[in-house]
Length: 361
Image (cartoon, rainbow, N blue to C red; front, top):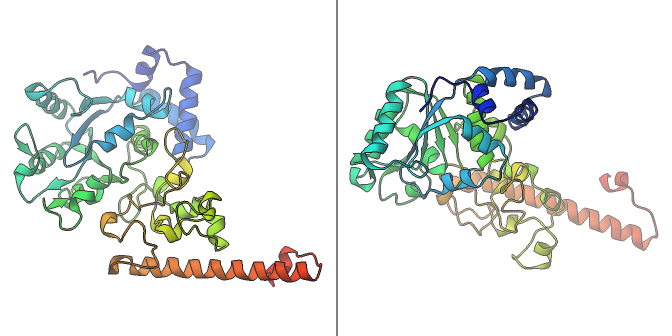
């Protein structure tokens, strides 16, 4: 572990050109929704920034968050950022095992006390310490011990952020989120099952550049990535506004790209960057692939009604308000579509030309 090298020195040692470095800074500014004028400031900050020590703890999880992070295509923002931090402890990615692995964690905590970044994925079981342990240490005890010297904590994935699937009814392990146990450290929630890779690294880039956590929403998510619903930016939104909905996954509407709301899409009440950032280097996202959003970046998403039932038919009180609002939107969209179709039909029968002004009257 080397802690005396700046990021700029590390980049030059790896043969990264000044041009490549500035391109990276521009990409970072774009990811964080900053204006181009901030690129020089980002470059100056990164040039002098020390490589931060990062400790990654994995608790009750499926390794999906790590799998997501490693699905990068070189060269990418993900590989560049993760190549410049000192990832000192990570069960899946580290070569060490057993006592050597725990020694690496303890040394990183000691040498970087008060400065290291703690990343956690997976929920923490409180029902019985034996449900999940590492080196004979319960998840709860390891989290509390490691969090003491952390500068900030990033809860990666919905399990760490909100309890996720392990916390779903009936919650047999007594699973809780990181924020349920840690109250004295800044926590950034990066939910998703799993989160988008560039969302994870975008948060790391912000912290590395400014030494602070990004602006968060009411449930601890970075607003830059979770500030709008997927529905607001979805390419199927125009069909929703026109009242055009697929009735099944293989009907004519589905083939034409109509809205998937009636098939259970939770995009109207789900905040995430899926529709804009997308997955697999911007290739696609679930709705584009023909499947409705399941709302995985929201608290208690597993218990918020069936994945194939529209929000207008809520299964429990949690979805009642959101469902009513979404249903009203569907009704309004359908009414607008019917009015437009009637106006066009009337105009066609009278051999008249229909204008936008006509339709808005």
